[in-house]
Amino acid sequence: MSKAVLVIDVQQGLCEGESAAFDCEGTISRINVVTQKARVAGAPVIFIQHESKTGFLEHGSSSWQLTKGLEFESTDIKVRKTTPDAFLRTELEAILKARGIEQLVVCGMHTEFCVDTTTRRALSLGFPVVLVSDAHTSAGNTAISALQVIAHHNATLTNISSFGPRAVAVASTDIDFLA
Image (cartoon, rainbow, N blue to C red; front, side, top):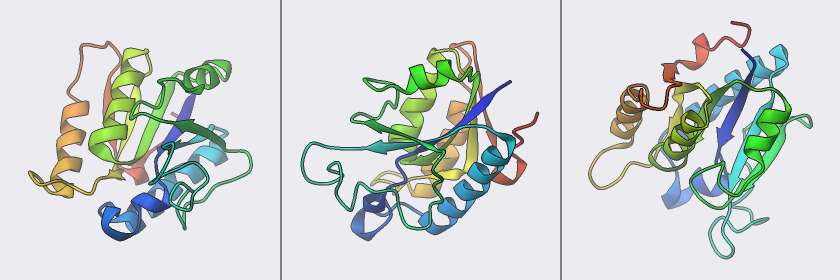
């Protein structure tokens, strides 16, 4: 089954200051492990960048840039988005179909927003998802901690069966692009 990696919203503005997600450095390191495995196997790596028209995460601003430490290669693909759904009003689905992609490996930020929404949309479009269980993160919220958000989504997204395709949670060290 041909796979592609979606690296969602790992942008400078979400990795520093008050808006920093939990364990950005560790999450970025694990994402780099996954993307390196993908490149070695010849699987596409697609970086999704959220943007706003003005202010925080404005296209081209320093907060919009891919974060420091995240490994990006010239052969990787970038997709801009304006909603939590990386498929909505973007070329993502067309890119995947043109490359014959059948399964997605999903990682990135913020778990409860863009990772969740994009994973559910991928399932609804017929793409099984490998959720990299230790390579998505959150800043948490007033109700639950970042660790609880991550654990909740690892459990919840893998429990959805109504779309047909399923999500499975797999640690970054166990991702296999040749299987």
